[in-house]
Image 1 (tube, rainbow, N blue to C red):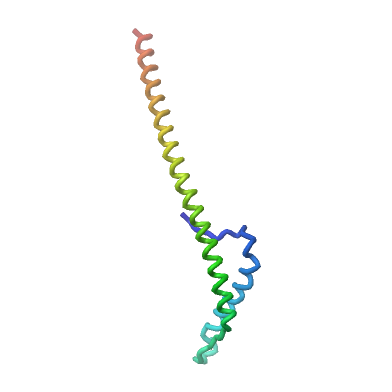
Image 2 (image 1 turned 120 degrees about the vertical axis):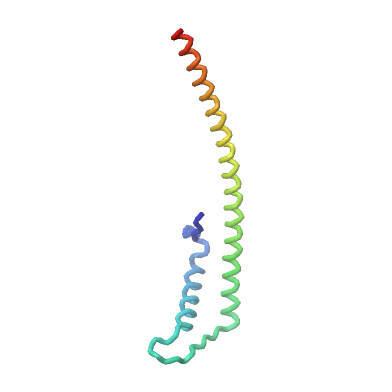
Length: 112
């Protein structure tokens, strides 16, 4: 099974853009300086920025949990459907075998 982000969810697309910028900014600030200078970069965020980022992550977490719950129900439903189709297929296979046997019996009767 492959898990992917649902790009069609437009409800949080505006929030994601600003979150991505914040994350990219934080990652750029944390990268080592490639000029050979070993100085450590310091990133300072305000409490409001951190709280906003946390709230956005929590909302995304809740949405992901809801999607996960829905997908689990869907998977269970599909598994049940697969089992029902296997039973139905088995029934038809048995019926086909029975018809083949009857056909074979009648062919033998005709030859005699």
